[in-house]
Image (cartoon, rainbow, N blue to C red; front, side):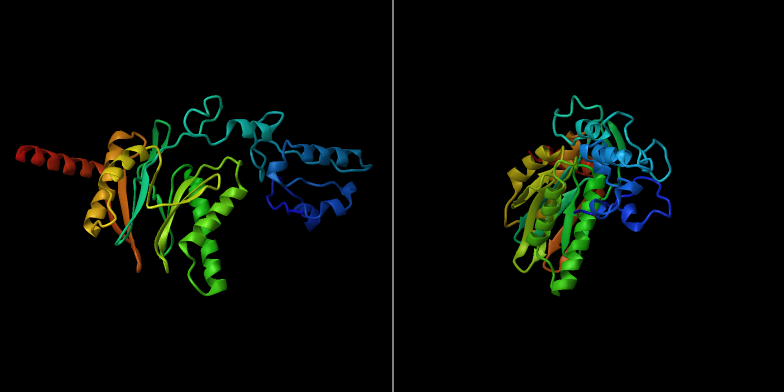
Length: 318
């Protein structure tokens, strides 16, 4: 049976260890009471059955209940069935699918990555939004998993940040066990497996995992429902349609390094210019067989005036 390791209530010191973490409770004496420590059990039939079992036992202690603001406890919606309420109103949905939810997951970003003969370009913006509210202009949306692997963030910032850092731990453990660097395919599969195990839990994540291994430059897309795709270029986020327009028009496998950097820069600029949920700083990385390097971090406002001058100069020549 799975061990319940998430503490959801204040637990007295005198309670035995197995009762504190809910380990093997089916084989233990139920008459002493059992604290349900799995947050996902709250409001479920399993929690209700456990409570009835405890109350029916003679001399049973009262089963602790969670209260809003209680120290050491999670705050839960003050409704009869918190689990069902969270399932109905906190789901991550695209488009207008969350119109009926009391809590809407408002998000927006533009990230892109593409392979070419000289490596991989990863280019992103840095704006964090919650609907029309701009929460930050300096979010680091490229996560450095290891010196040869990069991940991007799109969706829920906390979900992407946590699980990609967790992926970094898994990749390091692989290196220590096998005494060799993990491949990009294996790293993306680890993340996809993790996402698949949490499918339907409300995660919001659309990420790219890219890097260089013994097979050369590799690029994978992984999202919160466990989808894993291999490709030449991807763009993820609310501004991805604008970025794809630039990539589809100007991408070539035989781009020079300077041309590839300029393409990644222009694609993000046009996305931030047309998409209100994208903006801030354009962070761009170049991945080669020697690992990744930071190319630049440029304010998109500066890029706007740079490209406007370029456009005026071209118009005068014509």
